Amino acid sequence: MTEGDMKRLIDGDAAPVPVTVMTVDYAYDGWVIGAVEKRSGVFRVVIEDASGRLFIHSPQQVRSR
Image 1: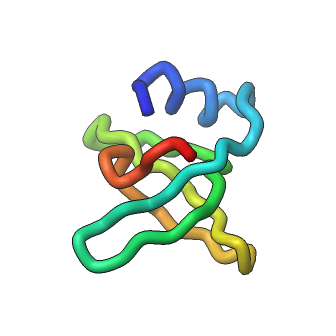
Image 2: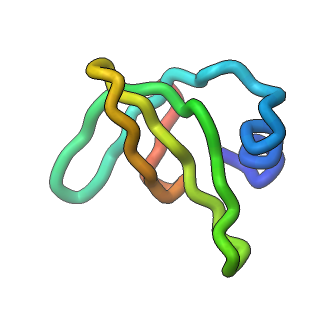
């Protein structure tokens, strides 16, 4: 995801995006429902899984489906 994508999510100007989260240990499908910018300026994405749980990931761990 680009920085522009993150800013649209923060502003609420984007619909949930279907993604696959891929880490070293696991992978799962979900939807990007938001993004946050940390005080350090680094972006994180909020992912909702099929059970409705929320997770926070680095954008580098998220792939479009």
